[in-house]
Image (cartoon, rainbow, N blue to C red):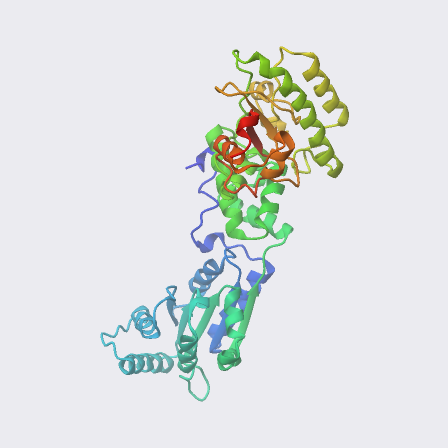
Length: 442
């Protein structure tokens, strides 16, 4: 969709296990070499463990691609089946389907196939993905399959691949016989920050591009939020590039990266452009002056809670400097001295990569200052930026002296992004109603 827009040959962050995009971190390279040697030397039972999204399936496909025609493989990924069904599926993958549903017939067919391959100097390998879902009885049956052997070689190579729960399951005393049979054991850990950047460089290079598609601030944010999980990096980078493509820009900035992160977190609708201003309704002039007082108080609270830790309004991007006390005081004085001026709410943190912003965008974007605005809705509204370390109930007590369920319900109606009143995010905007004293209690 967006590949041509960024000058790429293909989309670089597909979620399919394409071996062409395999990035070999030190752990991936070690696992690849260990499993390949174990299969070729017929070591018997092998194990590979990695967290969700670490590229286990891509690594397996790469191994299968590198093995020669002398290695016959059966790849099983649906581990919710019974052992007999798994055995029947494996025989079908080996090219020796068995119509019988009797276990003895299935085992005899497998035994015959294994001896045929061994006599021809070939290898048979059974690869089981998502092995953490197997029950104890199936593990024991697989151990018995590993007994197919000659004096010199194991006739069936079994590779168990799964998440960390697989390690925990095999540590049970009841499965110690299976654990003792494991001849090759591989663990793949999450990528470091440097490895994550190299992973992105590798995928973009294979796609015909480079990391110049992302600004430095965007790269730092995406790498930090992915926590070393390749699949998570793919999802975040893909979404960020889609947002940039939608805006018609040719470089992914901090703004698109932040939007991609919020989308993955499921935090409601995402707005990339400048925030819309809320101004006082013409028919409600009496409400303007009290909320200017609240504006000054909100700015002071935001400064006390945010500036002491180095960031204002919960923003934690190191590229964006916090607002200064002098600037906040100037805005508070302006709010009190200019009754006809609209008080604007802060937009997203100032983009560190302002080179991609258009003059129109810069002119329309409000200054990054914590302030309060009235609204043009039928009832007077104002908007605040959530400071660090607070909750919706605490904010209601702060602004209204009341945290009743009825008041919280009205606030949630105005802010559909709130899913749980006990979990709101620092830096978010909240629209607050003007509540009469009669409305504050159910």
